[in-house]
Image (tube, rainbow, N blue to C red; front, side, top):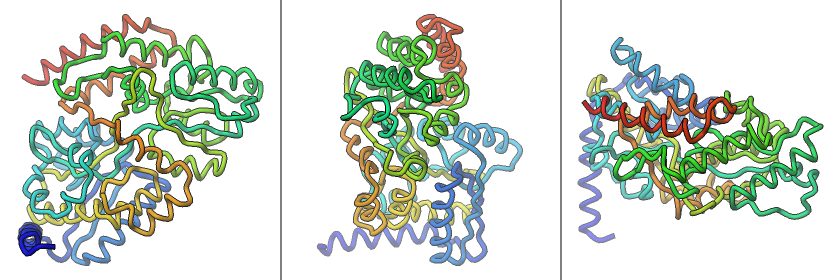
Length: 419
């Protein structure tokens, strides 16, 4: 390393240490997160390792539910002055809280942190809203296609069938349901919201344009994608209605060997592998009209209501959580994407890539993975999308009519929230 680079790195490190220097003994950071079961165990290991290296800081981790639960509970906790110090924020929904001044601008911390140069470009981008850093990524993901190769074999597939288009997936799902439906096995789980967003993108569209924030819910390609997704349940009957009203039902049925195909987050890899072992196969999302998948997951933000010493301590933890050591532990245990360029060289990641077939599929999709829009209206849109999806998938409303109505409501909400 040249003297100039050494001096620059040293200055950055000194600046970062001065910013977090006020984190002293017995500083407690209350941290809300969305990880339980095996993911929760991996997070606890990261917290334990951090606390061992930083005996003056205690991370009080608390599982408070999924991403939707975190948004709802944070909205209630902030005015009641019961907010945590740090919180996991899903990458399309933190803009709502940044816009309202609830999140600390982490740009000064991030710019002084040598970590920033080690993160992948996509990982740096997902934390930026209106030109400022409000979260540092922790768990990043794309949707992937999982299938149970034992179920496909029992349905008569002697070799892997094509799974690259909507038509391919429907054909395989119909065969599975026809051959094994009498045993209570269905072809596919109804796609969850993250997968629905991915399927819209693979049909060469978006829900909200990531560059202009224009609402595209009623664009022809978006409507076409929702028509196909809804048909899996209502018309073709290859997906159970139960997995429409509760996404966990579809995931758990796939884990239990009752569903042939599941489109879901790479973050579900750990649970799927544990449940199905060598029966699990992982493939890229379909490229129906184009190859395009959304970047999902979440990062960690710091509440602006916390004291400066707690914010300093919280950022020190955030920086560690994105380090090669911590990120490799997280990747190996969960299947979430590496966010740090140096993670792959860590022992935990090397072992996972060698032994866990399919864990690298999401990494290979990064060539056509894209960040998504994150203005405040996205939080409202994603919450409302669930009931719209249920009405369409269960045959209660026409898809075209519903999506046009949904688009109009979203545009109106965007105007209201911007005033």
